[in-house]
Length: 263
Ligand code: DAK
Image 1 (cartoon, rainbow, N blue to C red):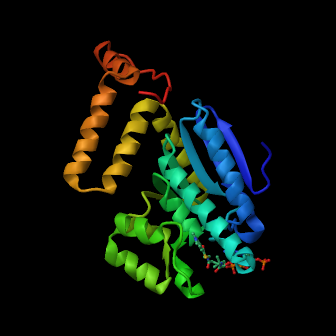
Image 2 (cartoon, rainbow, N blue to C red; image 1 turned 90 degrees about the vertical axis):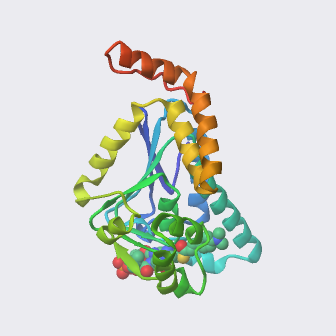
């Protein structure tokens, strides 16, 4: 499919979606969300893709938030559709059966920061900036920021960021636990590609099981989470991934996982 607001690239088992509206700092309008929904459909149906990377076009922004120009013109019905589509996509990203890495190359504000939060982890350029400035627009985060940010960096830090709308540098975001790794801007994509390649060599089914267990466990108490882990482990143990991984260890060779996401 041809996209206008996104670029889609695939290199071996690694797919990259680049938000591509650099003149509007890659702000999320309805067209971008619809295209993203379509791209996620393609990725969900293609077992050759083992890892997804999200990034932004240009050197200034990952995503500078929802498109404020479009938001102002939305009718209540249009706003409802926009909200529904956005929330569905953020949820789909979290449930995608493969790991998703955010490569944050600049501003990640509002809905852009929330998009990054819905990824499995974040690498950032040293020049990147994070923030949830919705409060300054008289609204609140609507793509999960009030829920995911406190889970990631703690309630008090999240309250301060959401109540003030202030921005965090990439380094401060790393110290807070929002970002895993900061890299010089010109090394960001190479660093992300390297970690994506490491992950892509692992078994797709066990990656999927680990991702699901972590996501579900974060939404429940420890004992329920441990039960989820036990069930997921039990499913994994007789999977082709487990057979290949354990055989490779015993035969003193590198495991070659087939890439099926099914357990
Ligand atoms: N929307 C639309 N256009 C934007 C934009 C945005 N979010 N951010 C930047 N642009 C546009 C600018 O208007 C400008 O366009 P031209 O004037 O050149 O036509 C161009 O990008 C370059 O921006 P600047 O000239 O402002 O560049 P600067 O370097 O001076 O400043 C900046 C960069 C990122 C600090 C600044 O652009 C800025 O403050 N942008 C807005 C950031 C922001 O407030 N983001 C949060 C948006 S609110 C919901 C779910 C989610 C949401 C809402 C509802 N539901 C489920 C209900 C999400 C809300 C948001 O994300």
